[in-house]
Image (cartoon, rainbow, N blue to C red; front, side, top):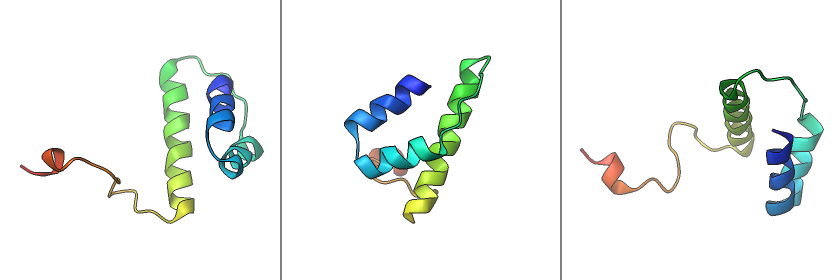
Length: 67
């Protein structure tokens, strides 16, 4: 998980990576499901902080949304 945070720091915005490093807590995860859950929670809280609607993802293909 630390490697993924470092990759975000190198590839994405400087302010975003600073937020991640300020609030990053190193934890021991026994399974990949634990890592997945923590990254999903991080993504959720960052989207809420940016003011976007979590229930309406951007850039979703119309073929997926039409029935």
